[in-house]
Length: 126
Image 1 (cartoon, helix red, strand yellow):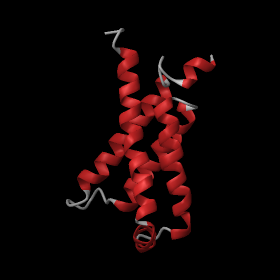
Image 2 (tube, rainbow, N blue to C red):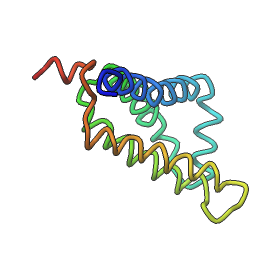
Image 3 (cartoon, rainbow, N blue to C red):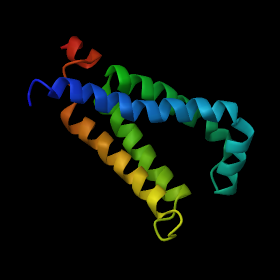
């Protein structure tokens, strides 16, 4: 199992990162609609550029394993907070979406605790 761990670490980071990179790029293409949806949920649309930057830059940092613990901590908080804001755990139609956000946050917390692994820029910096 230890021979597979570096590859599993890399695959997990890339899978988590892909979600955020694709979501961030999608928000650029649907900027007005996303800003309007945010505002309808009580979140100022002016925060959208920060959200896009966090998703794309943070996703890329996770993918390559750069400052992984810090970025993973930020994305864990973002995932849980956005789940609470946009997906009510009490609404049966939104509960699964909320739980997905919670699970993604949990995945990032594992990166906070364990780091990026051998195949990362963090490992090269040591």
